[in-house]
Length: 198
Length: 198
Image (tube, rainbow over all chains, first blue to last red; front, top):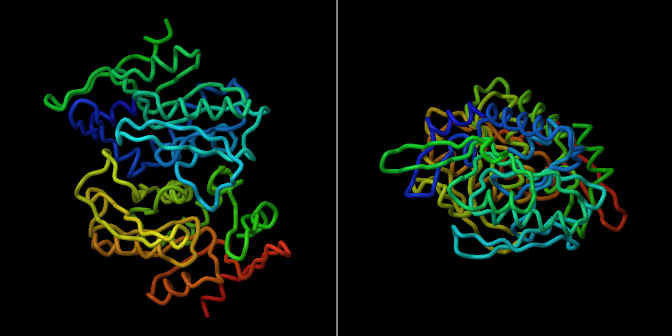
């Protein structure tokens, strides 16, 4: 998605070798206009799949998931990372490792909103090592729903998550795949999605 | 907002004296159609205020904030409850007490995205004791921005938050204000927003 790539190039800030800050439009401040285009792109890509639910994890996944759900005309669900009085006790549960924080966390989705009649599209803002996405895939498997694929806003193509999830036979569509990035030279290069379609 | 009230009546589940679960459309599963109407209603209510930023707290506030921001044509910002490598270190910080969890938590907003040229609309899914909203009001005060008011999806009119925030001279617009609710009788009654305008 050219608009996304140009926003990443003009506004993204690279820290060290693997952190890309895009908090001016994606995951702290949110630009509704680019979120609109992101949702439209995912809805178009997965339009033939008969999707009934969009599933993400709080918090950064919520905006792209909602936008996609709106264009598909289906509900979005966000998995909870914390227990809440507002969440049912009867939940699908999966454990996700966070490399960033060096800890595990648990995600939960109420059984009330996902079952074996659903066709699910996963959405997330970033794909790096694939841990969060594996947790969501596990939740979908527990529910018996069909998994249509995963829509990722920014994939760190230099980390192993994309290969890992694709090797599971899961369709992954990323709107921008970063090939390399360098804080020192402040440069970012992108891969083509087509590189994965050969 | 009649559509919202009818959804609360048909889908809301009352637990004890003060928990209202609306996780089928608002804060776990999200219905993009009602979120559309919520955003439209807040944008209309605050359209004359020259708003430049919509501000909320992760996670449940993100969907209504994004929808409102889209109709106002401005960015949404969500305050972070956890530190993240993706968040700047130079932040406005406020401490919020959670009665639900019996603990305090810290919210942070990057100074990069809010300053004294902004006019801010606060959005949140619930208003009960007003603690989260007070934290956001504090963040806006620190930034020097002008506060236009707060848009609340569901206000628990039987708790003190609404009176507290209004007594600070802040305009609060709630789309549904619950007067009373009873788990035993499974009944909910609403107040009119006009009750606060006398």
